[in-house]
Length: 162
Image 1: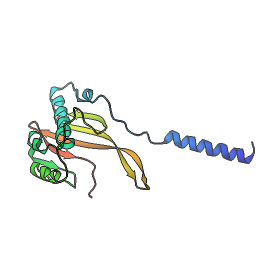
Image 2: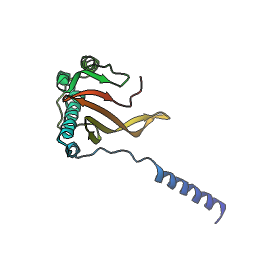
Image 3: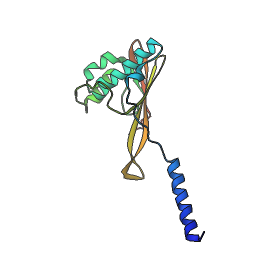
Image 4: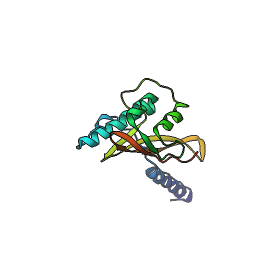
């Protein structure tokens, strides 16, 4: 094989190898209801509570339901959101407005995982590429909740201080 053909073959193999190793973007699970099932009734109830909180309060903007889902002493570990149910309502009340509550979570939900009093929601997410803001890249976002007495008592996510 002559040099230009070898070079072309090498480049093609590198491109194909790179494509084979490229990121596989996360995808939402179309069957959200099945993700709420659990062998343990307590875990299933916790998963449902967090799921409904996300739909009604977080996505639906119905902050008047916050006391239904959040403990008064709710602990927030996101560095941009204050701790406490009242502080949560005040913070989100500045920029969310109530809208009709959807039957399912609108964001691309990848998984709902529950164990004991902990529930994790995992979402597919797109962000602007820091190397090229005109492009986006796919990633996954996690929200983890601890429940106590039938309400959300604590929340974690990977948010960085803004």
